[in-house]
Image 1 (cartoon, rainbow, N blue to C red):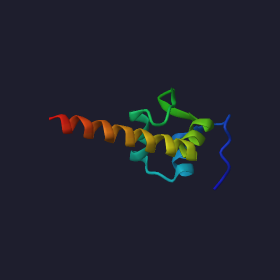
Image 2 (cartoon, helix red, strand yellow):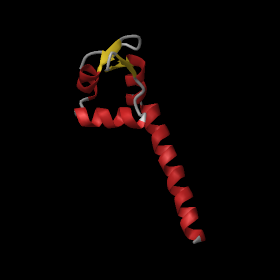
Image 3 (tube, helix red, strand yellow):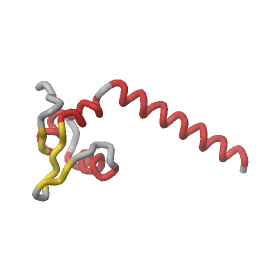
Length: 81
């Protein structure tokens, strides 16, 4: 795997290669805002820092904690029914 440089701009094809994901998965992530990108001339460009943010262990922990809080809120609502 090549090194991801935080200040470099990557195309969607390069990003897919770095993350080892399919085109449809990347499109879904862009649409949901999981990966922030800029559209230039009809094509997305993704900053290396954004890719690093996505693959960092801290991001995974934050996502897990968010999911656990959401799950608990849902359980609490269901109990009240």
